[in-house]
Image (cartoon, rainbow, N blue to C red; front, side, top):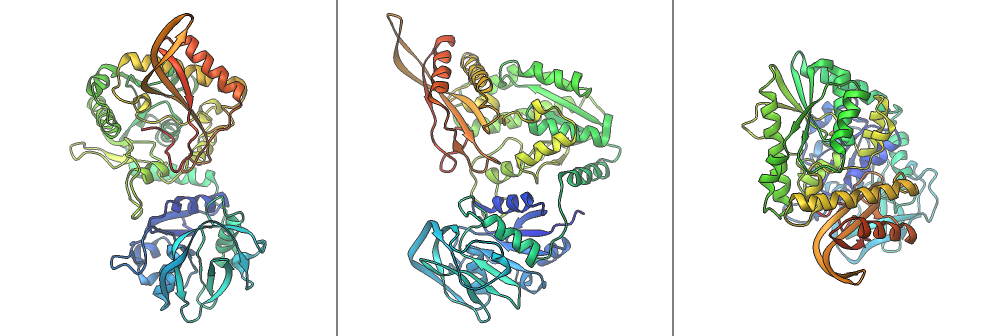
Length: 512
């Protein structure tokens, strides 16, 4: 078992994943566990420090989320963030009340006592507050080490017990030196010296896969995207011909995608690839379906049905591999705590009871940029590794309403033009994700001397690091104009192009 330096106990904050991200950016291996994880399971991972995350609940509620009290008796440092701080205050005998002055947004942090937690941090640094409760009375042995305008206990510590807590969120970008505080906690307070590298993780995963698979065979579903491509390359490195990579053409792909996937795997990587033409099967089942969640579930179930059909053609298949990532898991199901479900992902949530496969998800603990690093370690071409994310349900969730061949063709043509212009301008490499959405909203237009009543396409381009948060890209107006002009002129049936200027949150990146 790989050594986990820091464990984060998740109380449901929307930022919990960012804590793990910041730690890994500092080459500190960190894992997230549900807040209710029992002490024996925590001890089994032999961590050097514990972080209690934020969360939407209040510690004074009857059904407040509680941590196993054995965490405080392990003899290792503990850091509480927001709800985690309030949890610590109550658990050690202090009190928490509803605050008269809620604090949301940026605040100036005044450091009032020297602490290893703030080593190298500027006094007056900006931090991000997001709370409506506050610590009213400090527990015995605790003292304030930082304050803000509305928080006399912005950060507290019990040096003797190695317990620290902060009311703000150091993990978000708005906390200018929050990364330094988290690094200080791990390196200077917890004494973490190991430097976690992707190469180490890769070797561990190869060993884990070999031990788990044994002499069995693994069916791996390929979408042509970065995640499934890295999974296939990783499995081929680990088990060679015991891997059966299957590419399902579901009719929801971008223009020319099937041909590109087949070329990369069969010619570039020399990995044998099974291609299944299931276009009619997917489109028949999606006919007349407009609800996005229903679309996702139909696509997920149909993928599994197609894989099962293929599996029956081969002997010894015991496993199904998927490219599930950390953000997929968090947005789909609350496996790590009480976090709210955002949307389901077709490859998250396990397999149906009737499917006799064991699941292999070697990327489940990784963020997107970490997957790209693994792909490069495996020798995948940069052109494939640096492709923008493409959702498992494909273009089905980029068509508002019913999915049909005519609309898919319209969207494909618009999408190709958008990507061509972004690549020509250099903005493709500078943005996280770009795509077109067919709104199925018709409007009046004029082409030549004729009136038109055609469809509207929305262009969505965002900047992000891991997809957990994103901001819309500030593309030059002349580039937007060129994209719009080409789509309207070259795609028959579209007479209007709009640009999405919403960020995540509150919006998601995809529209469905």
